[in-house]
Image (cartoon, rainbow, N blue to C red; front, side, top):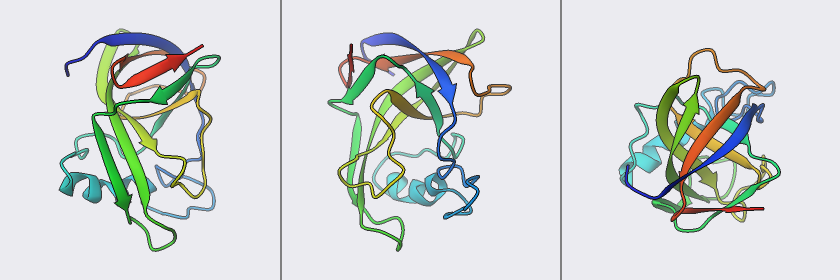
Amino acid sequence: MQGEWITVSGIIIKGYMVASGLSTNRPYPEGSIKMQWPFFKERGLDLNPLFPATLNVSIKPKEFVMKYPRYTFRCIKWSDEHSPEDFSFSPCRVLYKNRCVSGFVYYPQPETKLDHHHDPSTLEIITSYIKNIFYGAKVDVQINKNEITLLN
């Protein structure tokens, strides 16, 4: 992955668990991510080698703005339950316990997303499975500063 990388520190936090399908009410038993992947793949982004869930990283007090993402897919009708959504992706790397794992910041654009919104200090990341990571774990995330802007 090419780019000008900057590193931001964060903490793994619990998300809504809808992306993975582990939510208690399980609106999408296989997870929303797995349902969305074929639409991303047919538009040029194959996420199949990655783990079908999101890693939620709080970078508080910092916030981020997705400025010029590598990929943006508009009007993805991935579920009959709601209107089409727009998604953006920017390459990233997660550094945890002397390991570096590549992935993408996953950004369902809030103006088209029905619910399960995250605050602008939470990075949702799709990456390979990271063994023994846990809520509260400290991680560093490298992002491309030409694609994502950090605030604060």
